[in-house]
Structure formats: C-alpha cells, structure tokens
Image (cartoon, rainbow, N blue to C red; front, side, top):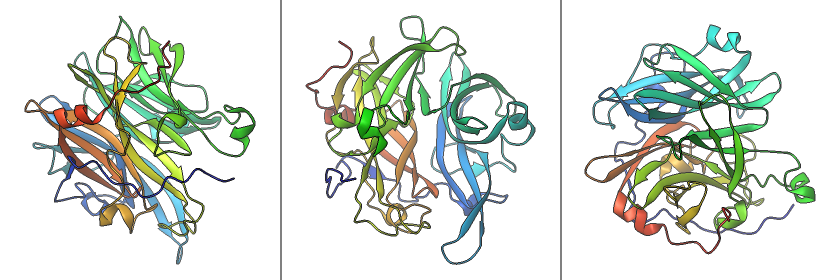
Length: 346
C-alpha cells in the first residue's frame, strides 16, 4: 500500500513545551510501571486531577518486551505542573472483572454538572469498546455505557448541547471505506448524542482523514473540547504512515507518526467544523518525543484546560511512554483555526 507523502512537520509557533517535561514518567510512579502516558486531565474540587495509562512490561531481552498488565494511575497537582502520584492505581482488578473487561486504558476526563465523567477504551472478549463511567472521588466508579465493538477515543463535551450529552468518537470498521479499507485504515471522527449518558445514537460524521493535510492514515478525537466565545476548541490526533521509516522505539518496525491537530466546532452544532489549523498543533520534535519511547514519533493529547487568564494547558502522551505538558494562549489557538471550505453537517 502506498501512502500520500506528508513530509516534514513542525508544531505551531505559539506553542510552548513545559521546561520540566515530562511532567509524569514511570520513575514518578510508586508501584510497578513501565509506561505512564495518554492521561486524562481536568480540574475537579479545587485540584488538578490526572488519570494516566500505566502499562507494565517484562523485558525479555534486546527488543523483546512482553505486556503483563495495564491499569489506570491517579495523580493530583496544585499548579498543573508538579504532580504527586497516588500510592495505588485508581481502577483495576475486581471492577474490571465485574464488567467483563480484560484491560482498560486511554482515559479522558470531563466534569459535567459537578461530577467527573471518564471515557476510556477497553479490550473485551468481543473486541475494543469505548466506555463511560462517572465518579465523585476516583475510588468508586459507576459504569454508564459501553459501546459495541469496534469504537474508542471517546471524549465528552462539558455540558449538554440542545438538551443532550454529546461525544466525539473514532469507530474503526474493517470495511468502512469500501475496497480501500481492506488495504489501509482510514478511520475518521464521528459524533453521537445521548439523553442520559447511557443510551447513545444519532451518530454523524464530523471530519474525515482527507480533510487533514498532515494525515494519510487515520484521525480521531484527543482531549475533551473546551468552550470559547468563538466555538468549541477541540484537539484531535492525526496519523501519517511512511513505509521508509524503520525502527522507532521498542518495536522492530514502526512506520507511523502521530501529531496533534486543533479545530473549532460550532457552539450550537458541535458536529460542524468551522475552523482548523492546517498544520499540526504539536508535532514530534523534542528529544522525549523522538527517541527512547515505546513508539517514537507519537504525540497524543488527552487533556486540555482553559485557565481564567486565557492560558491553555495541553497534556499529551509522548512516545507512548511519558506524560507531557504544552501551553499556548487561547487567542493564538483560535487564530490558528482558519475557516474550512467544507461542511459535513449539511
């Protein structure tokens, strides 16, 4: 399979990486941890809260790693930069068995009506599914919903829109793009609505791979959207493949590159894209994004916080290995989202 060449990419000029990156790494976790990344981050009850993916591997020799477990770690911060990881994971064990979940990963946090909703992906006995749970204390979780296979990368908007809860999601059907899908992935961003977080439907396409200049493989939601006067500011992940790439990380061969994009959705019709940055918001450029990770050349945002002074904190997994932070002013991000010449909501 040949792919349209994407070429060299760079982060937007207004983006500033936190000088202490990574803000959470395996060395900061007080229990067994090989990789700490792809975290959901929000403000809840006066604290910054992070739930991160913790992968555990046995190292069986050069370039040989065996996965032996995944759980969700919990950390708190007073400033969003310096994090204290709790003494044990916040979600694992019996809760997963009760709901017939093999493993849980890639959490996303959204506060709605004073409660924290967590979206996540799970491996089940019937494939990959997306889930939604609600918690008040990050110790007890009420499962609200599990999708049918195959769906993941779900994020919730922080308020009802038109009287309904709204989410972005990334289904990945094997035959979703006809004959072309048999040879490549071509996964897109969709949206669904719900009256109660349990029952979801009215599913519509939001944006396709072909609308993103720096993607030739797949796209999907990233951090939950934040509300601005001009629209819902929304990150997404965009993947390009270059078959000339060789070993990039622990795996013998890794030909993909993950970038973070940013777009603007209509306030009243969040399925309508009204603006998008035509270049990546964050492209892999720093050392901890390019080398030494489980999979190098990977940027994956999972949390975005709009501060009262206009600063936007963007939390992202780097190299599928560590959790990092970058910032920009909201006005600069909005200015980067140029109007698009297509509208899938019509």
